[in-house]
Length: 426
Ligand code: GDP
Ligand code: IMO
Ligand code: MG
Image (cartoon, rainbow, N blue to C red):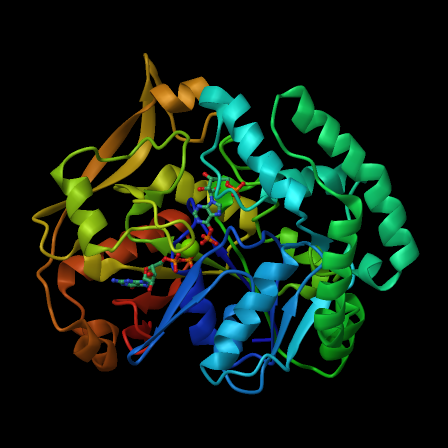
């Protein structure tokens, strides 16, 4: 494993954190390349549960370098709190590197997130309210404040003096009683700069040296393919490129450096926030999956919408990401059901769609075309994980092999529970 990107094939929360933690054992460096603290990655090792939002999941493996790439939007306060939280639990953040080119989430981004969500009406995506969209907007509009600005007080002051009056004017226009103070934010952020300075580095140079030395690099995706700003169900997406190509842009390496792409496929589908969800179940099957799968947001605690596996969206993810392998997660959650459905196409009027339509209204109105699989019974999954692939129930193997056949990609990792130990390599 010289360089692998792990991405979500659905709407996020596929179990990327768990899968990253599992493979991080064999990597030297683990890199996040997009998103921010909208992500929530839960990892369970024995009886210890860790929730990470901005620090790569590799932090839980000893002696690994973990990197926050230029493609992220970083809330420095949240990052410092997360460092403190893990260090209190005996995990050192000494090997953390923060890109000097990452953009910073500012207090006005969070306020703007709330205002924009309110103004958007039914176009609101139900964001995590962490300021992600407004921070990426400012990056693209070239209003952004970057990590390196924290070490050039003159530039920081100049940029804040330019941008804050503009933001205040916008808030005032919409009768928001919000007035951000240039000096206050300037001093607050210089303080964050002091505390973060020991982590800051040039990620592109560090990764290039690592490749020259033959080190293994694992790129940990956040969100999922269908939340991608270009390829997701726009505008019900996040604001970054969540697909594998984002790893190159968001860390400063050329695309030829990526050798493998693993797509994490949850055995069913979940979505948190607004937007089309053709296989959503608003009945007791959906409730069963939500309760059994503990489908409540890691970041916001919101109940996740649940539904059957949708191969239209998984196959789209195959195409977007050049997947070379799959990790299939949460198969244990489906146990106990007599029948399990899988969507193979969408029906809209007299049309059948085998590929995802771009039009958001067509997507919202599309009805899934299902095939049905026989279910499997509850088992001691931890025990079975240790026994290997052949010991899985026959119907579960049929389900896994169907996903492999439809995508044309082999499943490498099978996840049968939230713990590191509930995992098998096929
Ligand atoms: P991520 O955002 O893709 O990293 O996924 P999250 O961590 O937000 O959500 C996945 C949830 O499912 C977490 O609570 C994990 O602990 C849990 N999980 C991961 N894999 C499995 C699995 O195979 N079975 C079960 N039951 N839970 C899992
Ligand atoms: P992980 O990495 C699931 C969703 C939000 C909202 C939309 C835009 O844990 O898989 P944003 O705050 O990014 O502007 O919100 O995207 N969303 C996620 N859904 N998992 C995530 O991350 C998500 N990050 C953002 O719910 O619908
Ligand atoms: Mg998550």
